[in-house]
Length: 173
Image (cartoon, rainbow, N blue to C red):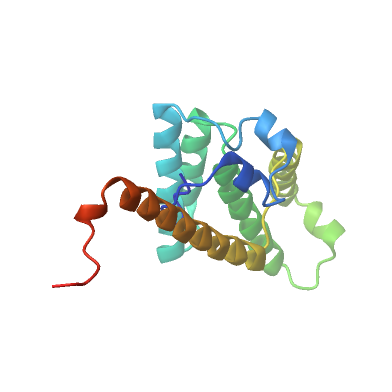
């Protein structure tokens, strides 16, 4: 089930997108059944993302990401939220030091720690096989799912029509 748009898709269709690597499947990032704890962890990530969209990044977003990742460490969505948080925070720190070179910024222990955390999460995501789909490709993929849904609906209609021909009203009164 593709929850982004509520349509049923096949594993082959998802794999055919070209944005899911075999390592990501081996590492249970995609196409795997979630435990109840993992499902709740995803809801924590959604809560954090929704909060971010409405109010911006702050510690609450990080708490949601960390709590979710505690129960679902391989969650690509949670890792992406946490990496985004660290990236935005690091960019903010850099913006507060105009005229400083990258080396000068990284000479500050807190900035270096934040930079290290950011790259540690990027590496975890890369090692797990996560690939972010480009926005334009994602929009195109959603359109193709809509088309696939229409095909499935039509096939269901045809099957129903064959088995229940007398129950179909073709607009005749």
